[in-house]
Image (cartoon, rainbow, N blue to C red):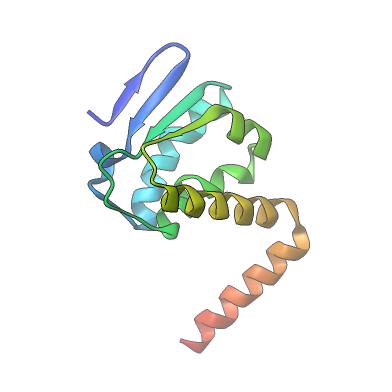
Length: 124
């Protein structure tokens, strides 16, 4: 079972939900859809990455990074408990969080990033 909900918190077994490869945006969106409403209620979410063999930034951007669009960084940092991450994956998640925070909190950064993405899409 990928979810275990208790009165004060929700535990998400990422490997149980998406398999051992957490790489796609679609899978990340699935995890975000589970996390977001619980954090909005002010409840703790334990995200357990045990069993994940490959973790990629597109997954993390969707699953975790986009939480910062409408939930303050401090609240996400306080209520989101990460479990089962390697040291490398912890660093990757930290970079995703820093980038997402800058993107959502700085209109100038958001415009620059959106422009760069649009330009890259036109070139391909």
